[in-house]
Image (cartoon, rainbow, N blue to C red; front, side, top):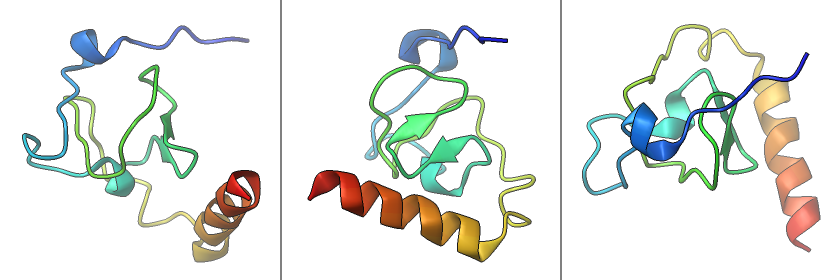
Length: 76
């Protein structure tokens, strides 16, 4: 099942200098500079109204590290 992502405007996305939270700590953020809920390039230190830290802390550290390594491999 495919989900339709929200635009940055609808989600209330803010650039790094304006947001009170950071996307990189949100449950929905991926180290591919992406979000499960918001479309487009998402900066790790950006923020939106959908921010939720719940579940992120419980994500296995090795899974987070795998995401970072995959991103590094793609950039090379």
